[in-house]
Length: 343
Image (cartoon, rainbow, N blue to C red; front, side):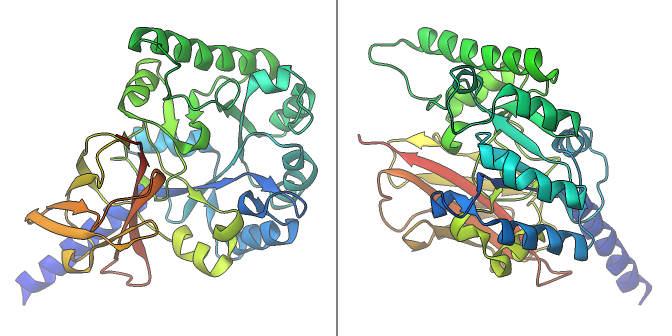
């Protein structure tokens, strides 16, 4: 009896430990009813999202506090959230910021400094960004002009590509520092696309790389490819967003794959876990526009994930989930993004 009780207490402590060091980052683009629905939420829907966070006692904190806590292995309260926007559209100032201020919620805006310097009409100017930063918004790096950073130019060598992208990232960082006085080394990858070379460069430059693939984050996350849950367009429905808000990060100790941008089709992913608050029999992965992935458990804590057929060219994902043993309505969630190139 005592042995059984000991194991129950130990399991409970392990489960709590695994969960309270996790958090969720949300990604938005437009708060508008007149712009493309695929990347937009209405002001009414956005307000409903924030109301849900408030009513259910979510801990909404600045992105830098979330990242710092995870990197340092510090404990975060359960249901910790950070809110981010990509591209710095004018509607972030006109529509989103006033709503966020009503809720007193911090947020981050990832911007493209070259587009701002060119005076592009659809993005905020430095004056508005500076105003928002003084009210607590974090302004961070989304590359100079929203290029596909991993793509090499015609006849460009690896060395030339590396110099060009390094200059792009550092120029953008310098302009943000000059204009708003902030220097958070967070790079949101344009289009959410990255490959091994880009991740390595970002890490060498001392930056955190942030994608658009879904999933929660924890101290074991790869800080050159942190996930975020998109919350716009199709993904703005509150009933499905609630599941993501309450999700947890798998304790992944090793990921093995050829590259996120690859000609290997179908690609193969091997995941090694610290097994904890989920049953491997309930672990499942799904392939974009295809269905359930094939799983091959190599060992008790290592699984090989493949697609039953070739993926379409362009962006795809493997989304892997498992219900929590302690709270079956909560899910562990991991996403592997792919960009499939022609051979």
